[in-house]
Image (cartoon, rainbow, N blue to C red; front, side, top):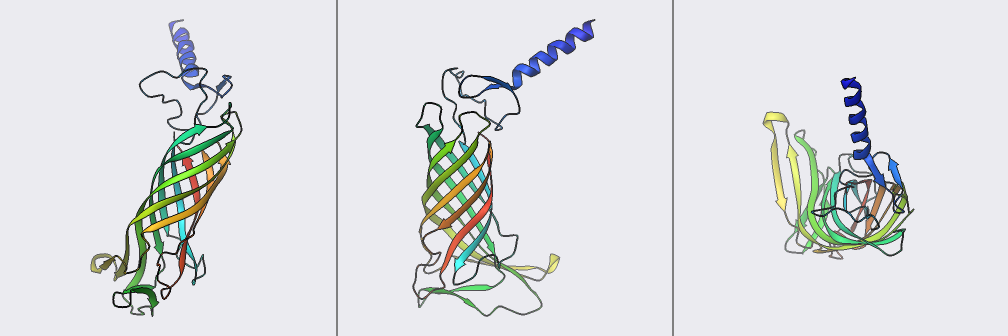
Amino acid sequence: MNKILTTLVFICLCSLAFTQYDSKGEEYSQFKPGFMWKFTGFRPAIPEKVYKYDRLVFDLVYSDWIGDRDPFQNHWASIGLNTNLMFDIPLTKGNTVSLGIGLAHQYMKIRHDNHLIGDETAGTTNFVEKDTSDTFKRSILAGNAISLPLELRFHKESWRHFKIHLGGRVGYQANLFSKYVYGKFGDRDIFKSVGFPDQSALIYSAHIRFGLRNWALYGSYSFNPIFKSSNSVELNRIQFGLSLSLF
């Protein structure tokens, strides 16, 4: 009898732990839409308060470029990550329309397996003939940026919502570097070149997310080229991937 009572109490406690509310205050015993969805800080949540979404968003992306070089010609391992810490500001009573604003870090990596060389004298950056030696393995263009994203968000009133985020970001390209790898395993040599003479310090782009609950497909396009000289190769960044909202 004691075992039965203990089991019933355990089931009730689990039910309460996973109970959550949509924006109308209706109870649901469902999976949480985000890992930290029920976190309310140091004070308990106000029952009448409209819930907010997508405040910590990770974009796992395939990074590429478009312009003088065709997209989708680079290696599949060109994987980057955007980390977005956002404020969700409801614009309607049921939070069906909201404004997202915050701070983001972007790590871009493009494995292009060519030689991208900066000319300090001319102040330009261009591709040169690829090293065809047997020891050359791969080359990577990578960098980190800090940006301020701004989004207009549309979604259904329930927490089990379909959502669309239309946004853009303005930021600063903190660094940009090339990495060349020769040899393999224990006999591997890595050459790293930091900075380009005409890299764009300012970045500005547009992006979109659409999906369900805390999952979404992501795409972005940078309006300014990676290298700003008119005599350099013209390359604009593009990204495609998957977004996950944890909070």
